Image (cartoon, rainbow, N blue to C red; front, side):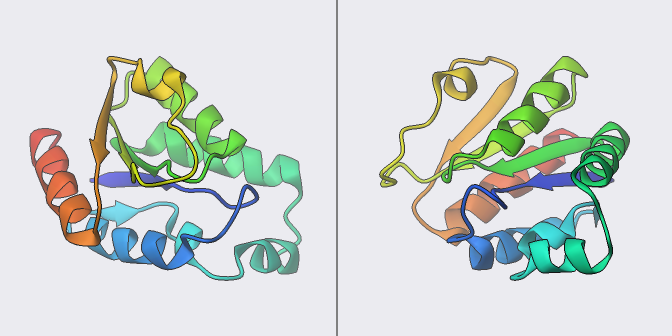
Length: 140
């Protein structure tokens, strides 16, 4: 199974350690095409590789198209994550969003109001992992 994981990069990196833990969980079910999202200095790595914004867009869209499922941590708002989710829904990919309700940011109605998106509100990593296990089993 190819899994596209999405989380905020330029919108804020406060949850990078959480992203890494979620990616570790996802990797037990398949190949995470976007494991770099859980890397502390992802922007520095992209610059080091000489990737332009256009390169990053094209690479991410290619991975998104290849993915069997899409998982996003959406607690930190991100224009890029929203864009990826919109494309995934348009391509009828199974989409699961994780959101911590104690956040200072409300979840967008464009995510919460979309019947094509599964949303799990969670308080800790164990709850998120259990929801992902269920989602991935249902979408094998």
